[in-house]
Image (cartoon, rainbow, N blue to C red; front, side, top):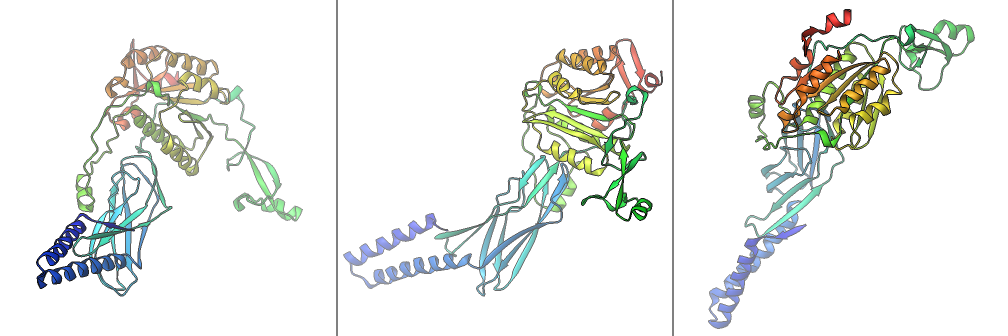
Length: 440
């Protein structure tokens, strides 16, 4: 697409003036100016028309899945497949990625020449972002016309929530339902073999039981029962009514790699929003328990009701992080409704970690519902007042501590790692240790 620039109308005005001068005075110099302006217009248009022909732009990256706080590296390759040189090309990155730094101006690209550069983007928001389209602009030497070409892209990057590495988390020990093992079949490999069955396409080869296979002359695989260890469920409160956030100016970022590495803080600064802190805390706690070998599930009611069944391993962590990357605190279902809807599917003895900025008494009602079902709640309270929301977090924490509920408070700009690793909780009668309470 070729667009007319403002300079074009200046040349047109000079052309009209030259025609008027030739008609009035008949001097030869006006005829020469007419030829000059016409030649300039035609030559500039042809130059602009050819400027983007046989030009291709490719975008590549080593990884399309990274976390908030990391630096995304993307390579742009501009290939001039024509024999004609190009004076200049302006690359405009139209990616939806915040702070995307792929825009550049490249000068003097020779015929059959390829140029490339690398952009560095500091990832500050979670979600999935399309890496494109890419607009390429060029034009003539005098700026009369400008040509634009769009290169669409289907590539995208998934930015997962920021996750802190915690070494300990004050959670109570799980109980076996009824004092018995859970006789429940599972697709995971556990130390509890339940029997064998015939092989089906898709079964992992490491589950084949070779002695039985040899006896029966057909492939047989082992079946396992669920490990008799309590599950860990994370309930993330995504109700819009209880969320709070403070306005923040967009960070000033540069695309220079050296600048990014020198100015990037040691600790990632999350937006001053309760839900962003809640998502980061949920990711961190999930990572901790999964590294401990426990099965972790996730439940939340944001845009839609989301429930991930408890599983173990890196695959489950990837599923949880991907789910958290898309969650928004725009739900209508309150915390007590989330707990009531999902707790009926939880086995007795499960540990339930509730993350909420709510200061309403319904939080205590939700805790009571879990305790009636013989579950062990742990509450992470976000101090809504420090995020510009309603007060009352400390009073709610005192009420929960009086019920012997493990409770932690996280304020805006607080060290999440230190808040989650604390080993004592304040109660109206003083400080008491999680470890001592569990032992008794």
